[in-house]
Length: 306
Image (cartoon, rainbow, N blue to C red; front, side, top):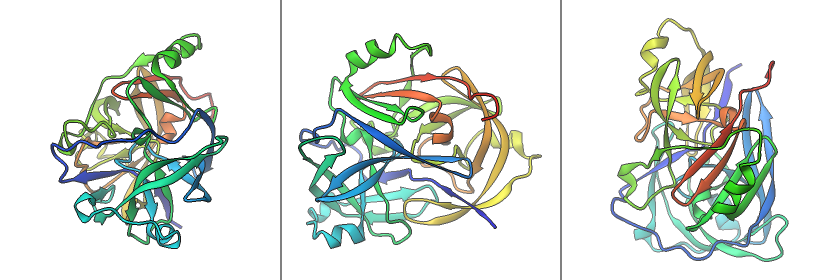
């Protein structure tokens, strides 16, 4: 029996020099995260009414845009935007799919009394019927999403207030330097690439709550140090495809001055941006403050036996 590892990140192509005009996001203050746990992986979901139907959306910091499956869009007769606003998306297995725009979709998050609208891309692949929520689609200057997988909570609040509130927590909050995917345009901040250490080797990794496990792409500089290690074959389910890979156990990972030892997913394809992804298996031990152009993390080591 092969393990299936779920990875939701995707990159856009052909958007250099573009910027998006955003409307105010749907009303949102705080909501509970629904964290699915299976075979060592972790996946956080948000409950919301989308086009009037209650559904769960994968909270995916590795997503370039929020996404709805084609079947849902057709069932609710959601109109498509103009063809020149469609995006070519590259998933974790290197598969490329053209995704049409679904503009102004009504969204009402659980616990809120009113709805707003978000733009989504439509996933035309039949591999997954999941909806995806990209945090950057909600953020506006001066505000932040506080993502706490451990407490299963998502909050939207002024960044200054969030930093002040979290400064009293026992785990220190540290600002994390990141860079964007340069191929995606100067104004894009959806993908955030951070410096980490993998098996003692510096590596640039995407912050990705949508990946159930941490992922090392083929171009990750740590892989030559792991050639003598055996892995177990598995299948990776990405946004639009399935692909092969290996799960390698007990790999040392350091992020935000915090050490972890955990299984990682090794992919046979290179990442177009970064050298892999820090998954929810690491990020569940961190509180993230995802600002418009800033990133903070308060991480602690796993408890003994985790």
